[in-house]
Image (cartoon, rainbow, N blue to C red; front, side):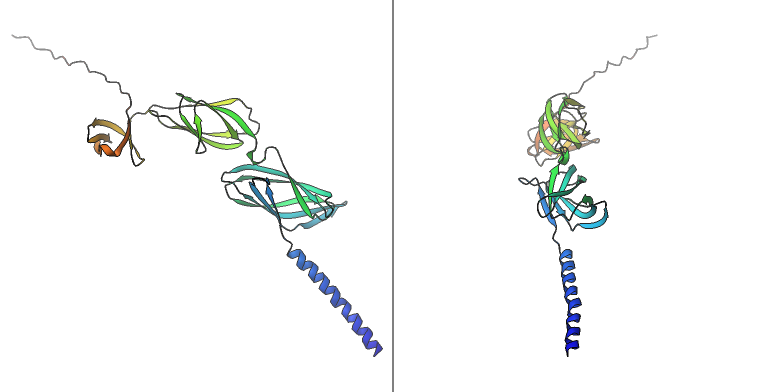
Length: 274
């Protein structure tokens, strides 16, 4: 009987150890992600750090890998974002750091990055330090000039004033569009580099319209030659054909200046009488 009880106690020990190990593994698998918003007042990025997986150790330093999901919370592209990520233990002591970078993140887009860092222990919390050039935060003042002046400027589709005008452009690619009544629209792509010096300027020359512009009340614009206009209708020649519009359909007319050259009269010699 005594031997049987001792055997029973010995059999219970491995069972208890198995339960403890299983519970620890289960908690590791269900370890929640660390979610951080940057900046805290008006978040533009959401960063989700998944479970930290140790991949190696050397000379007291542990190497960890984590899958990080970065989400753009804004309505514009973020050309570049870079953070120094600090890792703390349970006592809020810094035990490691690493560099996290993401580029060309479209509006509302998510990007998953495999992030590797070194630490002297198991991280319990994370802190972020944004670099100066991140989020396109660095802006370069630039003067936009049009020839002729007085054109409406749009930068990346947004109204930005009347030329000449000073604008502040973030690092990355931009599109400039200019319009002026009586002139053909003009535009150009523009790439702003991080080492761009302030005080530069861009000049865009607008070409003259070669045809009359008829703006209709439905928002459409017709380019052609205005042949005639009366109290009831406007006649526009399009590709050799006359198109008639009711006067009430027309919102505005822009007529280009034309040079009228008069042909000299043709002189025909009269043969002398015999």
